[in-house]
Structure formats: structure tokens, C-alpha cells
Length: 439
Image 1 (cartoon, rainbow, N blue to C red):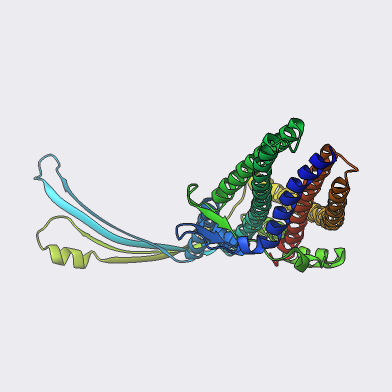
Image 2: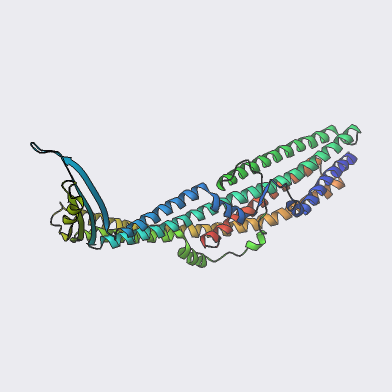
């Protein structure tokens, strides 16, 4: 029996050796070239591609353009409105022949004073335009975080898949050798069946990892507004060791509260509400407008030129419209504007409070994620050493094959936890950079 156990160990030992060689060659595998029809993209390239091509972002940019058109149009309201008209007709009365007559005029009018309403409307539309640019930046941050999460999840699944493929390759070789040794009578059938069961489990695990990777890539392509069938390979991000520095809570709050577009948007809401109140109050004041016109006409076509010349006229006048009683509409509008301003101020305070809470939570999460990553890293190394010790024990015949396989499965689970915690920490750390305006 001792001899059969040692034979089985040699098979598992070859599996571990293959796995060790694969882990050592992993950087080389990652650097291999792919076919020309496959896009190879880094994390920053994916973010840039998403911001450039995202359908949702393009729609937001169109809203920004519409706001710009509204602003430009409001500036044009200061200019006079000019219109021209020409009328030609025929008239007939009892006892008179039908006669042609016509009139021509050019009219212009401009508002000189409206209680500051025009100026405040222009100001309000300008504020709305500036706010729209921050709304675009706000979506850029949201999109960046979504790409970060999906990219790093996909890369983590890819790393797991490569690992599972190496495990499956080793299991297949081990199963082949085990069958040969079982047929030769070197190991028991139970040992061979154990190897076969392990191979089937490794195959299912690899297929699950492949499906997870493919699903994450589809989600990422959708975020990038990329053709979903486009072959895509993700290039691994910078080493996690370059992200170990975590800013203090004070630094995070100071930076984020001055750069986050969410804060800017709430500040603009207050300014827009303030100008809205001024616009409402402007209707208390009189409206002064200037109007002018030139015109001419004729009664028939006899001496047409002389008639048009003789009837040429000019007119200019000022109009003052004084509000006296408008059924309290202005007062009601002012009250509503005051309430809108108060609501904007309260929403601004709540937004700042919510963002502070989010920042504190994110800082706490990145600290926890870092500690978990460091713990899993130590744990992974420890389980690897333990597996090597179990292999030595099995070699000496002091443990069974079942115990050795259990220890290897434990190591695989710990390694999976390590990979997941690594990319979770990278995600949480990069989210802080986005909040600080460095993402």
C-alpha cells in the first residue's frame, strides 16, 4: 500500500510542478500577442473609449448642446424684433369698378426695460449651461466607476480562468498517468476514481470561470458601446503594489468636496433658484418698449410710383406698461420662487452630507479591502507551504491521498479568495482617485 500511495503522490506532485511553472510563466502568457482582429485594451483605454463612444454620454452631451442653444437665444432677446409685410388686394363697391390697392410696412420693436428680466434670464440660462457641463462630468465619473468595476472583475475572472486551465491540464495528465498505473496494478481503482473525480471537478470549475469571463466581457463591451461580438483582450493593470498608498480621510474630503461635479451641480441649483427669484420680482416693475415702423401704399396702379412715394410714412413711439393688478400672480410667483430657493439650499446641504457619508464609507471600504488583501496574500503563501508539507507527508506515507487532495482543494479556494480580494482592493482604491478628480 505504501508503494501505491507514493505513486499517487508522484502524479499529484507533477500536477503541482506544472501549476508552479504556470504561475511563474503567467507574466509571459499575459504578454503574448493576439490576432490582428482582436482589440487589446488597457484600463485607461477602456475608460477613454467609453467616454468617447458611450451612447448614453452622447445623449447627455446633446442635452448640453440644447442648453447652450437656449442660452444663445436668450442673449438675442435684447435685439429688436423686425418684421415686414406687404398686402395687395382688390376692392369693389356698388357703382364703382373694381380697384387694386396695397400697403407695405416694416415694423420694429425692442424692449428697453423690463425690471431686469432679460438680464436675469440670460444669467439663469448661462448658469444652466455651466451646470450642464458639470452634469456631463458627473456622468463621466459614474461611467468611469462602472468601467473600473467591470474591467477589474473581468480581469480577475481571466486570471482565475488561466489558473483553472493550468489546473485542468495538470489534472488531465495526472488522470492519464493514473489510468496507466491502475491498469498496471500500481495503484488501487479507488485512487484512480479519485483522480477522475478531481479531473471532472476541475473541468467544471474551468468551464464556470470561462462563462464568467465571457459574461463580464459582454457587460464591458456594452458599457463601451462596442459591438458585442468584437473580440477583446484586456491587458492587466499596474501591479497592486503601486496602489498601497491610501490618502487620509481629511485629504480625501478636502479634495473631493472641491472637485466633485455633484457638489458643483447643487451649487448651481442654488444660483439658478436665486436668479429665478429675481425674474419673478421683475414683473413688479413697468415694461418700457420702443417701437417704430415705416410704410407706404397705393389705391390703384395709376401713377403707382408717385402714390407709393407720396404715402411713405414713418412712425416711432415709446410704450410703458405698468402692472396695477394681476390677480396676485406676481406675488404668488415670488413666493414659489422663494420656496424653490429654500429647497435648493436644503438639497445642497443634503447633497454635501450624502457625499461626505459616501466618501467616509469608501475610505473605510478601501482600508478594509487592503487589509483583506494583505491577509489573503499571507494566507495564500501559508497554504502553499502547508500543501508542500502535506506532499512531503504523503511521500513518507503518513497521510492518505484523500487528505492530500483535500489540502490542495483548500489551497485552490484560498488562492481564489486572494485573487478576488486583490482586484476588490484595486477597485476600491481607484474609486478614491475618481472621487478626488484623479481617475
